[in-house]
View (cartoon, helix red, strand yellow):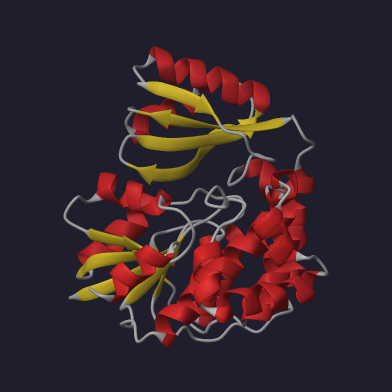
Length: 306
């Protein structure tokens, strides 16, 4: 049975995440302590005690989620969990996937995503950008709605059939949201985010991040990594780096990533991170795929028992 691992991005975090697992597996806290040292933040305390206002800061959320995913991966391996044939991560989760595929070191990745979070947050002043989830409208119609309004707005996350997130300036997102509703969207919901990610407004962050990404070593992944920008596996280490940088301002093709793995023979996907956001999306993409989530002690034990 071909296995794939998937790693969540922003939105999966919560105060207290992985607490039951940390009581059982010391590796969890050890990873958070190490990550906190890298970014000079009390990361374990923030994750366990909050406040939530601090955890949801993009520069904190990103290293916290990466650390959670990598720690769960380490536990999975230590407990004899099967090795996946493919890995993929949603947005930030792509860094987690690359760490677990031994293409990036954990400490380098923690520093990178902390910096990535800072730059993404700084790229657009608070309140000037927005993101909205469009439900029940075909991808092409969402794109058409974005093209029909003035200003910067585009599809940012193709999360599942009938679930697309748009991003851009606040006014353009509002106009595109209204257009989507007129075109038959079942629901359009503004998201509580700190910036309009994965759109053209993130290009300043992308340009600034290039030097940071260039400064770290990237190795040939030991497990094929399906990347967000084209839902494909890079042909070289240089291409891994190029795709990772482009991802900041280009849409996440999550539906495509899941389908690429399924088309390659994957029949079971394990969500390696807190929450079950990706499991929900995967069910919308391909109901035949079996999914497990490792974010709780019961979830980890159940997945290991499969």
